Length: 374
Image (cartoon, rainbow, N blue to C red; front, side, top):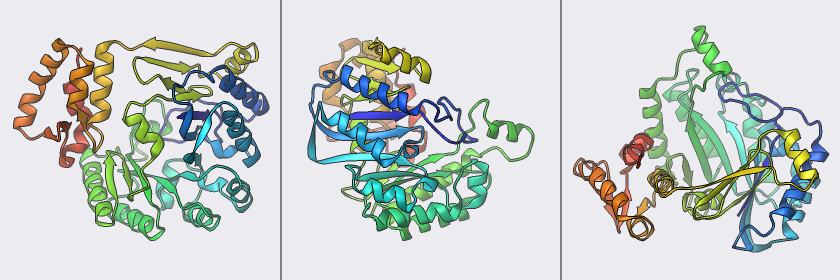
């Protein structure tokens, strides 16, 4: 699969750090550089038949439909597409006007991931989002009117501007809109962000973990009651609407990342990443030089990644795969580490897969970290 990172964004969200350019200056040069990278790296993927193509960012919906099509056409020069390929575009609600959606509906894009965040103004103002609550709802309806039924929206819980009752209303609104996939994350306070500054000055309260915990478990219970599968800690889908792209990440498949800051993985032991600086990226590619760095993952690194990713999913960690992939010393330490957690029912095994029971998923990252090899 291929991931294309669009390094442009028109806003700085208050709750995240900002690592890509807000300016559209040099957009044509950037698109040319990305097409050059696609050409130079056309032989990297072992599987030449693509099941997924994903436009992330940044804000890919800053591009015009024709620009998006041109990048897809470039990929199609070197790869074949499965008949039911999933082609996803991340988009801001305020970008999904009728003109944009009409143009996009004639492209291979067949899935939209919309950065809704919330259907309430107070939450959106806290997050410094450009769209309004009405635009959040209307963008989904417009996308459906233009034939986009495979939709995912992002929702943020645990905001100090809301509470459990507002969160419940967000979820009821989502169900009423018939959105088949939801990615939901707890609001986090990152260093050197506007949100951290506001909290220090007492303008807003710090998110409370116990409230986020309650909202997370309400989310899971509510969506399951409405026919959703909770297939990864932060992801919920109706049957048939799992994110094919993200599922491939979680199953350790190979992927190729194009564009500044994009990461790639060969499916075994090598990871690479492109430089984040837009102009340096363009300059290197214009000279025919790949703007990337890479590392060979040690056995311990591979093990830790497999544990971290697997324990976040409904599929868990394949114990047979661990036995064939890793040395006896690592497995001996691992087996010693899981014994007490299994006695305490923090970890369980099903069909020879190690899993965290869903009631402990909110603590999954910490549970996995306890099992890391150091």
